[in-house]
Image (cartoon, rainbow, N blue to C red; front, side, top):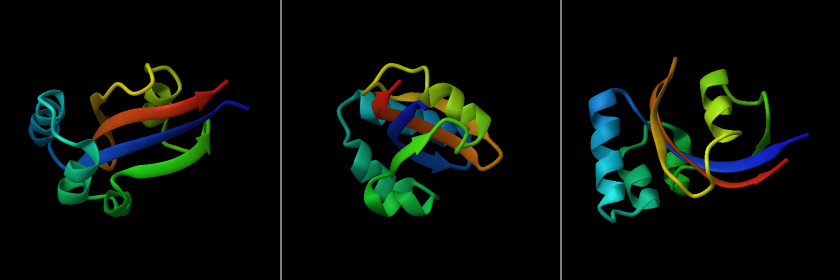
Length: 93
C-alpha cells in the first residue's frame, strides 16, 4: 500500500493561502508559518501530519499527496476544511 509523509498549512481563504505560498517561495520557513497561521492542530508541530496511507485523508488532499513532487509546496488545495498548502516530505509506492 502506498504511504506518504506530508505537512500542511490550513487557512480559511484562498487569498491567505496564496500569500503564505508566496512567502515560502521567497524563503520563509514552512514550519514557522504553519505554527503561526495554520488552523489545524498539526500547526503546533510545524504542520507535520506524519505518515499515512492512500484513502486516509480527504480525496483532494490524497490526490495531491500521492502525485505531487516531493519537497515542493502545492496549493492552494480546497477541501471542506478550507485551503491547504501541502508539501510531501516522503512517499513509498
